[in-house]
Length: 254
Ligand SMILES: NC(=O)c1ccc[n+]([C@@H]2O[C@H](COP(=O)([O-])OP(=O)(O)OC[C@H]3O[C@@H](n4cnc5c(N)ncnc54)[C@H](O)[C@@H]3O)[C@@H](O)[C@H]2O)c1
Image (cartoon, rainbow, N blue to C red; front, side, top):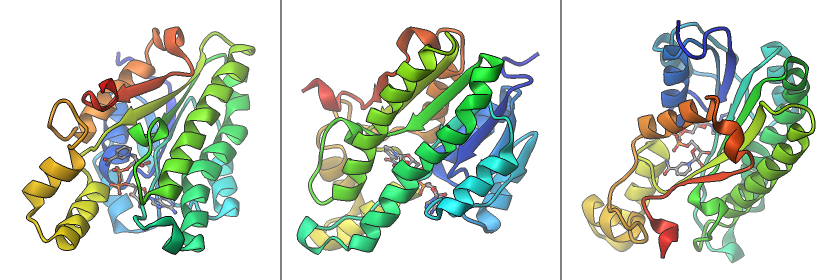
């Protein structure tokens, strides 16, 4: 018997990167996994890799689609709010519509999904809300105003949920995982852009730009984040509810 037999998980943004690795790992641990992302072949292909998975496509920038997702998902024991996107620009030229989309996908959608699904966790007395935040929930970088604001907000939301959930059950927890750079499509895109802007090769972008603040100069693998999610689904997660789990290779140790 696997550790998550009988549990149902919903992982947003699971067509790619961290979400895909988390969904796969939760499936390996025995959970039934609902995979959600924008509709397309990539989501269907990702779901084929995951045991006991089903697919509910949704554009999380649209509140009605988020509501439809939670309704169709039904009871969920493990909610992983992971979907995200980035836009890099100085604030004075940052497009307001990109701000709206990033806040909708990375802050409003986790709020709406939690609002809809946490009552079921209170009823059963067991639940895990795991928000994939970022080191940018705790520290800022220039030119990422929407992303940094959404992630700081997500951490505040995580702490609030943890306090409220503790009143209902000692086994409904909320956590934020706060990684530094992870090797995914989202980061690959930034590497390409930075290489063009600074006219340097990709290895130098990784070493001099992305890993500038890391004590350990290494990108994190998505599977390493999935391993942390496993721990947060385990019996000791209550000991640190409301936590920002920094997986930052020493960024914040400075
Ligand atoms: N890669 C990193 O370095 C890093 C570091 C810290 C935190 N994170 C966070 O991890 C999460 C996953 O990022 P990733 O690196 O795996 O990126 P990724 O681009 O590989 O995956 C993000 C997924 O979110 C989905 N998504 C984007 N907009 C959506 C929308 N409107 N509706 C539904 N789905 C949507 C994308 O389609 C994609 O599949 C994000 O929240 C990101 O902020 C990433």
